[in-house]
Length: 152
Image 1 (cartoon, rainbow, N blue to C red):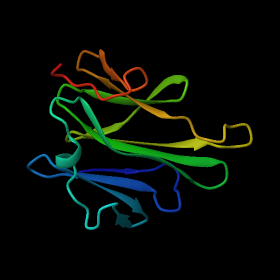
Image 2 (cartoon, rainbow, N blue to C red):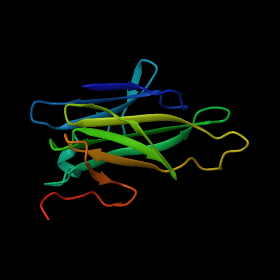
Image 3 (cartoon, rainbow, N blue to C red):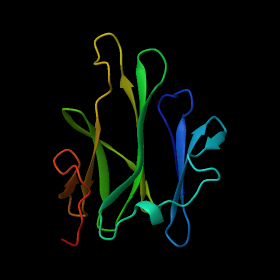
């Protein structure tokens, strides 16, 4: 299981929980305080719908939501194959990469994005980067917008 508390809270979300069962199926639930909610009620295991054979990365959630005066919550989650050793996230045109939380083949990222008076009206797009154990980037969502298939 992977549970991450967001750095800011939106009206509906202040964290996320991802669980993986013994068959390797994933379920995700957003949290608010001590309560959780899912787009599927009850929460359902999702990778049978979304996981494609041979893909390095698969996403099952990514959103931005207002989080009070001057901030937006950016949250995303997904899963990855064993050849991925590290996942980072960059935002918009900024090349700085921030680590995602990873466990059991699932990853989560959260960020508080400033939407103050000098910020753009929409938060920057998050981009997922995946690295192998040697530190080589093997996937860059900004330059490879479609999920890479390892069996090409």
